[in-house]
Image (cartoon, rainbow, N blue to C red):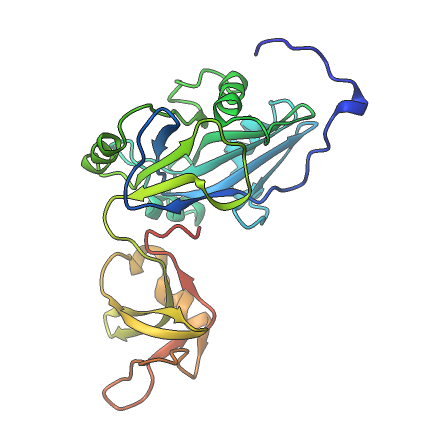
Length: 293
């Protein structure tokens, strides 16, 4: 990493325990022009890596401490100087694409795939608060911090960005079977919360739903009942019969531990043929390729 003048202790900015992450706004089109750069939209868990005096804390998007779930990432990050890195924890499939189902299995201990961190922003570095600096300046500092950003054996990897026409970038991402594209203004500072300095354009239609109940047969889990909030009430929107692996993820066993006697659906709630409400899951939520992770 390039040398730079040392900061006096009095000039050093105190690094917070957690910074609310910046979030992209959904856009129907991928923007173009020299004010934008693009990166792959990853299908994983947002992760904020904080390093101070060799101690590493890895936080989720909502600030929960998941350091123990990412021991390999923490081990590598412990060698870094004091810093705060924004990125996405992922598992890659055989084609190098992020696989959220495989990530969940790896976190549950069901699989042995390596969990990686794609780092795409740097908020603090050795007493410098970088959030007010332009995106490309922060990315340049991040690239210097990470060793051999092109090393495909590294647990923490630099997230490359691309300068390309928006429609071309989106078409290429979708053709490769990726989640979509995140576009970022090159001169914008880092601002917590959802705003239009970051835009996301997806491949296909994907939504976030609540699991409100399920149906089971003698053979196991038959389907899950899905809902969405409407004016503060859970509305039934349909059911899913595929996209989950009961034998692998143990969904049915998990559902039984949070079962409640009354259906949570308040709008068009599903009923069984005998007129009784479907078995309900208490305070349970699922993310079907969503962006609330």
